[in-house]
Amino acid sequence: MTTAGNTASYQNYFTKEHDMLRQAMREFVKKEIIPYVDDWEEAGETPMDLYRKAGELGFLGINYPVEYGGVEGDVFDGIVVSEELCRSGSIGIAASLSIHGVALPPIVAHGTHEQKEKFVRPVIKGKRKAALAVTEPDGGSDVAALKTTAVRDGDHYVVNGSKTFITSGIKAGQFTVAVRTGGEGAHGISLLIVESDSPGFSVSNKLKKMGWWASDTAELFFDNCIVPVENLIGEENKGFYYQMENFQHERLGMAGQTNMISEICLDECLRYVKERKAFGKTLSGFQVTRHKLAEMATLLEASREFTYRIAAKINAGENQVKEISMAKNFACMVSNQVTFEATQIFGGYGFMRGYVVERLYRDNRVMSIGGGTSEIMNEIISRIILNERKVRGV
Image 1 (tube, rainbow, N blue to C red):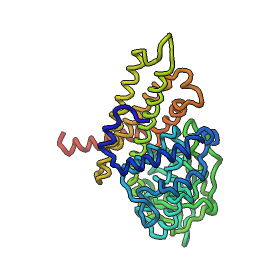
Image 2: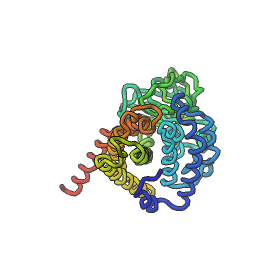
Image 3: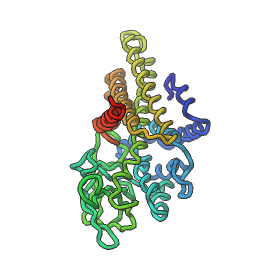
Image 4: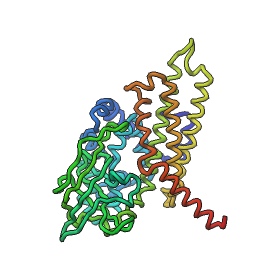
């Protein structure tokens, strides 16, 4: 499913090695995921067996240190894996298989050798799931105001509080948890690795969501939860900044996934309008339909090219905080329009379960919320551009 006009963009950014990875991922998705998507959506979870298979094939370890079982790669390898997982037509499955991408980076960047052996190697080999636990019931996007506390008591921390909207919260065996070890604000936050069998730790039943059904989501509870001091990532009270380091990559991943939502919906429409007839001719015979498709394709092309260009700069080591915030917002603006128009083109069928555009219409809604809301992205962008103008004397 490659939209017309996409070939040039792929040639500009992807090598033959990337193409080989894409083909391997596409075959994996076709064989191991697509036949079971509907069942997993209804079950509200993706089986651990699939996670293990992905780990055994090396798909979970791309861009992780070779010495801990990873596979060498670059930003575009990660994009390839994410895009092809999304081609399953279920963003919940894609999220379930890639959630370690936000849980492991702080450990890789700031953890000890022992932590990496214990908490990175088994995850990328598919033997254990890792999840990130930052959001709290009362906090939302205000990470610096989190209330879950961790008080040191000898050789362990005592953790109290709760987290919510935790992707893979049911199945994860370990959590990278943001806790308050110091005073108020960002300066008092640390990151702890909490294992699912820790005393005082518990998980709610699966939360029922509008979309991403195949990704289990839960609330976590810490009731005098005991966590060894050796599970502290890096230094105390540096956790907020460790988490900030990965936001560029997280938002890049979400922009790419969102563009794939648009691409799949557009491809579904291109197929459907050639088959569906109304008033004696196919839908593609109506100018209003053709113009909708043209606008959808134009927006998608602009969004995808913007995302790839920023990915190339991140790959080169450039700071792209402003630009990736723009790309995520723009991708979401595009997908909001494309998914709406796709369900409109499909008419009543676009409202029916069993159609990909119906599922993606629901799956798409959280993209403007997760990884930082559109409002947070705009705040980041506005602060940077105002400061840029100030530096230039404008």
